[in-house]
Length: 154
Image (cartoon, rainbow, N blue to C red):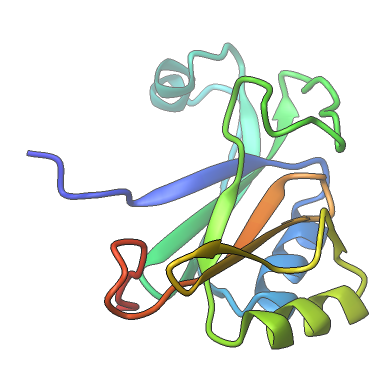
């Protein structure tokens, strides 16, 4: 039985920079760190990689986790920090907020780039897309408590 989403994972070339963004700016808390060296057959099997090694930091905010990976081997290909959200792959991580305009102003003042000001999509729901330091899209979503989009923070 599937119970829900546990976490979203992001590969980054600079795990400390990404952790600082998600913890310092977005309010996530560190759950754990893990390093693995070449020769871990179980992790090679799970990831479908050969001779892999990486650092991991698991972060949590409310009922959601973001897992950051910084691979050392095999050498990762550079990502496209301006990848359009219509391209195949994970399009964004969505953070539910209250006072979207206040969060937007705070994050923009801290240097986070956004596609637009917060926009209403109807039914009291507001949203905007911004980018983390690697160009991954982070959505801010404000939804009324009675909305199907509202989640309860754990």
